[in-house]
Length: 203
Image 1 (cartoon, helix red, strand yellow):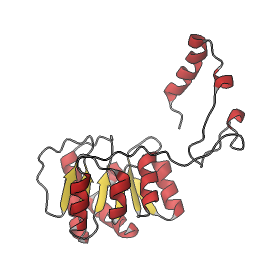
Image 2 (cartoon, rainbow, N blue to C red; image 1 turned 30 degrees about the vertical axis):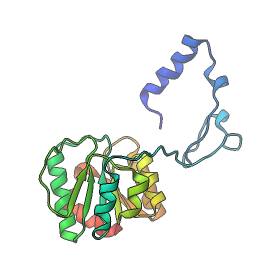
Image 3 (spheres, rainbow, N blue to C red; image 1 turned 90 degrees about the vertical axis):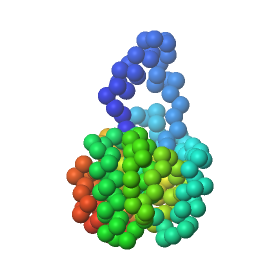
């Protein structure tokens, strides 16, 4: 995706460094799905690869793996760096929807400030996890639809529910639905009832 600041950066570079940005560009196309209009990025002349992962183990991984193995596969929930109006309300919504369906929930809080927020026994909250290690242990993954998280979920071979917040996230959600591996909807309009329905569709 190209955001508004990109034009200023690209315009500024040749002035500052004396470099013609078009001539110096050597690109690797990371993802399929977009028709690149710049002829210097012809896919026939440039390497085309899938998503690049830089997965690192976290302190919580072993504990999460043990917890996941101790019961039915959980549904993963994680929204990366996406802030929400009330993390406590979001956790309560997830907890209630999963209770309605008899599912366990693994919540990766990321930037959410949940502190010592009390939660039910069928819910586990951690700050971060290694997606490559944890996603295959889950029954489904629910996330914001970031490109990396979407790729990790599809790679793990489990159903995906994208609750998008903004930017390009609904695009990845639509691709998930088009591929028949999940569904998507806006996070801000999601309720306990609509989350329960969406989970029922993908599980």
